[in-house]
Length: 115
Length: 119
Image 1 (cartoon, rainbow over the protein chains, first blue to last red):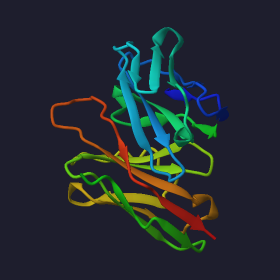
Image 2 (image 1 turned 120 degrees about the horizontal axis):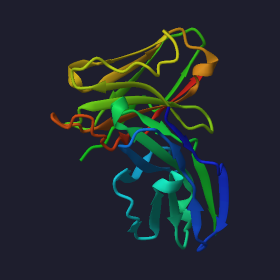
Image 3 (image 1 turned 180 degrees about the horizontal axis):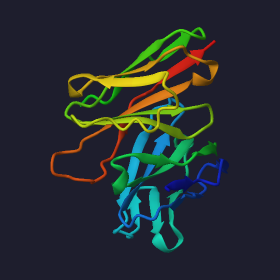
Image 4 (image 1 turned 60 degrees about the horizontal axis):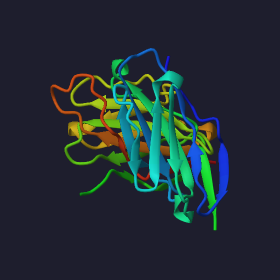
């Protein structure tokens, strides 16, 4: 069975602080994909990143960075120098190839950046 | 280009009535998904369409829920005899899965959702 756990339900930080959102996944498949989505107050889910299980190289995109560690089944997301516009609910998701294209979402982490 | 669109954006209905929610995927995307997001919850998978293949209906919560995808494009999610627990945001997503990709997973792009309230 596949499962994604985002243990942090809500996080509040002061603007310009760094914040890390945790994501732990479970799967027995060796080929899988991990995703992060952002859901701002407007409600529309915005794709942020996709990684496959064979590529553990960390990725940085501006103030965003992702740390993928297969040894701990984690795919954590760090926002550096947070801004008010980063306030949103962030979802981590897992997709495994043997279930077609079904995604398994975590319950999300609500991030509030205080000015 | 245009993203995934959904209509209506909001729907208020009375318990027991039927509702239809519409999703227009990104042009050229062969895969289409429906999810339900209850207040403060994650996304619950409902149904998945891929090209002309039989849909994956494994996430539909009851036989009151059904979905169609006509002509490989627009999809309609129908909820019959709505109940108060059906109140949620219903999200549609599409992805591009080209022939020959086998089981490759493609990024899903989401619409703005339909907020359904059952009184």
